Image: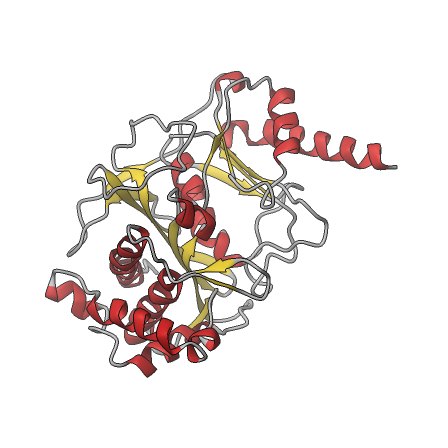
Length: 358
């Protein structure tokens, strides 16, 4: 099965959601709340999830959705709810035919809340399940840095379609990434790229647009001939991944270049098109379980771009176990020709770390 229709709907849905997130990104007032785990959520998160879920259920009404957000805080906050509805109501693609593919606009304020809450699937190993991260990297979004809108389709536990919208990455894949990507605050027309893949069909990128999809080009990871020349991509937030462990791994591999730190699955997209070589996300505590929406799209895009993605133990990421990657610990993504060496360095550093605690 080619999943051609699913990929088109997913890309258009992400593109439409990006119109809303960019509008909020450039606004000083982002309608921010704190969730129960103290992580931030904004009107952009809620609005993008409402738009995406509406598009998915219009096109594929029998599918399930695992979404990051839910609407209870909005039901208790009329002012924020009205602010959000103004955004959602006015967001649409410039191309009427593309807009119709997504089921047209969200019908009402109450329907908007229902669409946000449509992402309550428990996930699992059977059936068609979409994962939605409406603003992946909310802290980066708030500080004016990188974020992504992430969408993936999992069928019987296997990721079949993945889409990442990265509004603050350069369109031109040859543009070098600066070490500091935390200060992008203008609506720069040279920025904004979407990555997409369907299993077995390769990975592609295209500029973000406001109507129909722009032309795409195939992407692939570059082969690393000398590990010392490789570039790491890692999270900005030390709470998301152990920077100390990653520095030790880089030293073991002979890598002396500074790591490029950015938020969100933009790291997956960056290495997939050769603007980086290695992405590590190493656990900061033993009991932490990665969320499937934080990795499903990026995992497929990198693997379809001739890369490899495993956990720190060398196992494929398992998206069939529910809403989290309960069977995995950490994430290691790189070009295939260096993955074994990178993985050996990861295991050695983590083993030494555990031994030092004994």
